[in-house]
Length: 214
Image (tube, rainbow, N blue to C red; front, top):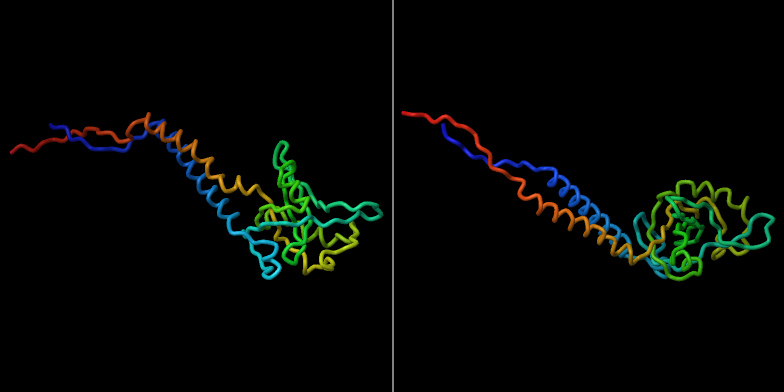
């Protein structure tokens, strides 16, 4: 009998945990690069004046304010916020109505952020076009004139079924979006350290072979 050594892939628990950290880092890198790409090629308000066609995933440098109106039988005009979305503890998003690219559109922005204040003041903010969470916007706008009164419609465009779009805008922090891929670095480092500590996942094991004698 003689020993025959073969190389086998035999990862232990440390290898598996290290792989999970590295996999998570890859997911965060891909997500971060997607978010950066989504906000990089931007429409501008001036550009949309000449080419108002926009699509899902397009980005925009927005310099506009939500439309203002007063409630029926109300006295004062206010920015029209048609709903608030809660996504967690102390994380609320207000959805306003704006007139962008020749359509009435929903615009969502996180409360308590610089972007929130900038948008309400008409300063430049970054965002991207999406239909996410805006499914009920057309229904809301169909009943708009029964809830609100507008003295000055944007560029004289009264609200109709044809000039309201479910394709709205989510306002984001541009700098954070561009650097969001950095969240993957700590997980990558931890994964590589664990992989180093775990050693090689390949081992040599023996198999007993019977030698043929002449």
